[in-house]
Length: 106
Image (tube, rainbow, N blue to C red; front, top):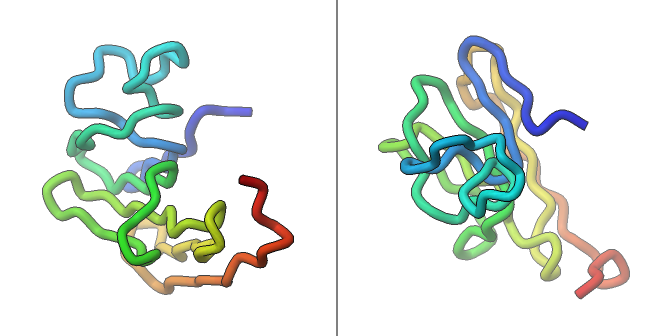
C-alpha cells in the first residue's frame, strides 16, 4: 500500500508531515507520515491526517499547518470520521459514524 495519496491541492496520510522531519517517508523515523505526533509542516497544500485522537472526538482544522486531523477516537468508542473535499481541498462535508463497542479492539 502507498504511504500517502496526493494531488496538486491535497495530501492524505496516516500521521502527516512533521515540521522538522528530514525524510517523512522513512517508515522507521518516529516523525514519518506513519508515526508523527508532532506539529505538522505547512506543505503548501491541505494535509488530511488521523493517528492522533482529537479532543472531544471532533475533527480539527489547523490553519497554521493547513491540515485536518480527522481521528475522532473510533478505536476508543468515539466516532469513525471522514471528510469529503473538493479536488481543490475545500471542505464539503463531515461524515461521522459512532463506533460500536463490538468493533473496538483495545
